[in-house]
Image (tube, rainbow, N blue to C red; front, side):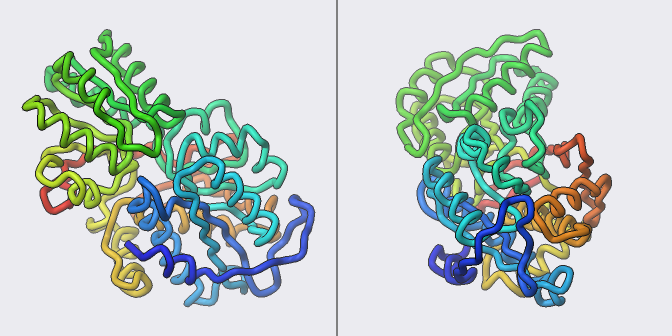
Length: 378
């Protein structure tokens, strides 16, 4: 992880002249990429890793001369995982910094607000690699968001299939009470229905809190064999600690948007055995994309550690860079056209694909088990 102050200092600041969104073009010497990300609050550990993934990729391409003769300026703003701050940051990125594209935002509800307010549509701007698998951002189709990860429905389907195959049919859900949590919950319900099963119990907690006690009690009262968690680092850790304190046993599965090392840091031994969905290949693996990531992290990461979160946004940055390369004009519309041309982009053992009618770039999901040192076993 990189300290929040250093991340903010690394990108600098700037103000460009206003242009209409569709004619908006990059300056002669730079391309501005904007990112609103939680560098504070309950998702800060993950947010810092997300920002780092983009930073090292953009730094690497800048060290090679940039894209189409221009260096990338990566502007990062902290939103604390708060919807209103994400909205304000996006306006700042588009209007003050005149970002050519947006990148690596977090939060289903946060990004859903951008769609509801037509912020992306009015600016004619692409958002690449959002750190969410929420269905409301995928259905109905919208042309602005380019996803490089599987959906929560695909993640939860993989979990349910694994559990049912093992003979486990008594399943509960702990979820965040917002669009993110509801999306994951619906994925579990749909996957169970496909197996002719019903959900045993579901209980929620408020976003941006660790107020999990009532959910713990409600789920424990039904004694499910397994609990699927649709939550982020700190509430996941709080749930595991409080549930295990009741001497209740269950298998625990978590959606992908967590930082394994942060969960171990917060929950200690109570994090043992947690299975976490993964939507990118192993960042410690042998695939060329993973080797490239580790090399760039070592060179540009200022001591940051390998993580799935930073690797995911590194992959997203690679995709965005290729879209910039293929853009016939470095305008917001040109970037979208460049991204649409990536019908089968092999990044080195991991394939992403878009076209004019498809924004779902990957369906990769696999499960990993959390070790006591915060590493994942696949």
